[in-house]
Length: 226
Image (cartoon, rainbow, N blue to C red; front, side, top):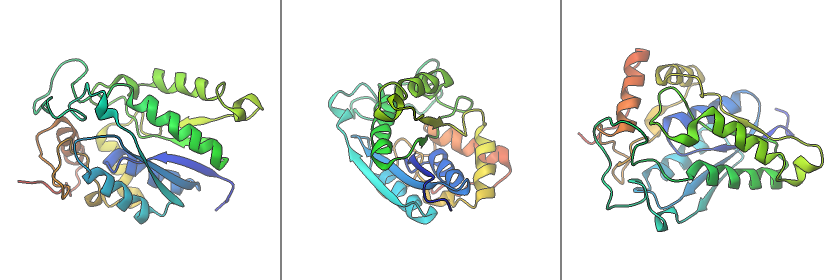
C-alpha cells in the first residue's frame, strides 16, 4: 500500500458508509475514519462505527462531538419529533439541517492536517430518503468550496470528494459490500435502534435496507428487535 495515499472516510456505522470504507481500503487508501457524536437518538451507530472501522483496518478512528441536538429541527436530534414509520412525500423529518455540510467541513479540516486530499462519503441519490445534502449538486458545490477555502487549494493542491455510491441502488450497494467481504451484521442503519443495536424494522432506513437485501437476493443479516 502506498503510505502517501491517505483518505478521510466518513463512517456512521451504517450499511452505506461501511461499504464506502471497504471500497476505499480496496482502492489502496490509508483510511482515517471519522464519526460524529452529534446528539443523535442513540449511540448504537457510534459503537457500530468503531466496530467496522476496526474490522476493516483503518489507520485511526476519530469521533468528534457536536451538539446538533441543541438546535433540533429533526426527528434524529429532537425526542419531541417522532420518527416516521411510513413512507412520506418531500423532505422527511429525519433530515438533520446542514448535517453533511458540517460533517464534510470537519472532514476537510482533518484531511488538511493529515495531508490527505481525498474524502469519502456514502451519500446516495437513488435509494435515499430525500435529503438535499445527499445530491450531486451539493457534493459538487462543497468540492468547489474545499478548493478555495483551504491552504492546500490556494497553493495548487486539489481536494476530491468521493461519492462511489451516488448512482447505485441499495441492492447494488449490498452486492458491492458482499463482494468486498463486508459483514453487515456489524452495522446499524435504524433511526431508532435499541442500545444494543437492534433495528425497529419499520422506519425509512430499515425499509430501504431490507429492500436492498431482498432485491439483491442476499440474506438480511440485520438484527431486529422483533
